[in-house]
Amino acid sequence: MADNRPLSPHLGIYRWQITMTMSILHRATGVALAVGSLALIWWLVAAGMGPQDYAQVQSFFGSWFGQFLLWGWTFSFFYHLCNGVRHLCWDAGWGFEIKTLYITGYLTWVVALALTGFTLWSVYGGAA
Amino acid sequence: MSFRNPLGTARGLGSAKSGVAHWWGQRVSALALIPLGLWFAGSVVKLVHADYVVVLVWLHIPGVAVLLSLFLVTLLYHAYLGVQVVIEDYVHTEWLKIATLLIIKFACILFGAIGVFTALRVAFGA
Image 1: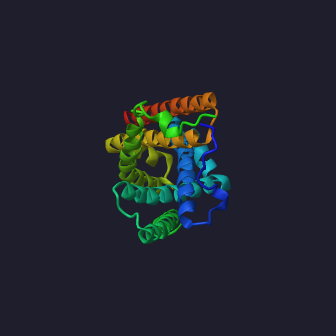
Image 2 (image 1 turned 180 degrees about the vertical axis):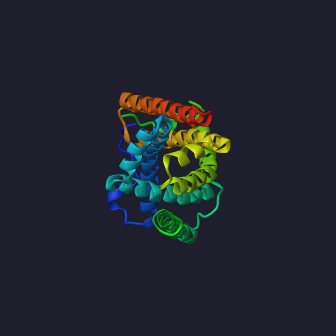
Image 3 (image 1 turned 90 degrees about the vertical axis):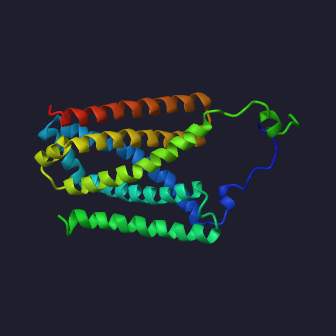
């Protein structure tokens, strides 16, 4: 279908909006979590193999790079979860008004960051 | 250049048939992953500082084996459906697109099988 019919405007000339950042971030966190599912299976398999293998995986996730990955996946998980609920609401036909769209958008950020913070606190601080 | 518009070319070919199944599969697995994901996240937080033996005891609980298996299968199914759309959107060479999709699909099934097998093997006490 290579013809000269007009296309919708290219991303480059759109004014920046939080909604488009949130949309692309939903995708990015989804892909990150797909990779994270492999790490989860690696952890499980190591636990099934024995204490030495498990200790090896634990020490990797204890390193700064491992911690960096885990916190990335933690935020990705909560962001994708909250924004996913937002998507399910849209699928049910709710929340398309521009005002509601922005309110739920900011709400997603607040809840995702709060849950990430709570998890961080649970692991390093109070509950441990 | 053809003066038939794209709609005219597409009309009469019928629907893509399987498109709705993908849409529903993604939504229903998303819904299932809300409780399963929160359960897993909560469990991991409790196990972060735990000894190996504590993790093994946890994996031996029958309910954990069932939930963990369901979580893994649903997670990889949902991940495949999501990554599939990303590949379809950005990979425009037909053979490369199909090859990538097949590799990712086989990888998801393989890792899912490994994960569920491990969960059950540990639960049954190997």
